[in-house]
Amino acid sequence: MKKFASEIYAAVRSGRLREPFSAREVKAACPGWADNTYRVFLSKHAVGNGRTTELFVRIAPGRYRLMISN
Image (cartoon, rainbow, N blue to C red):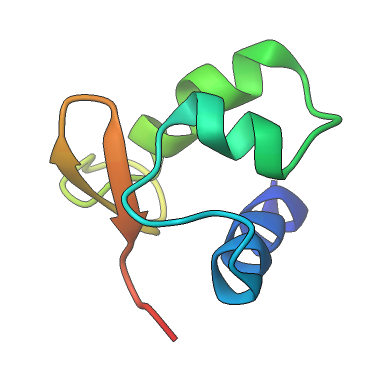
């Protein structure tokens, strides 16, 4: 899943994905992953999840931004 996170970060840096983004927008910018990956990855890795690496900040239901923007 590190590769998927790297693709999301690269898409934001290149301008293909604008913040805040949704799972559907991530799917358009980073195609080729299983549908379930898009549905669960962002929330699973959001700040405050308490279980996994925190990579994203949930700013509204279903809307995220990178935790560390470059």
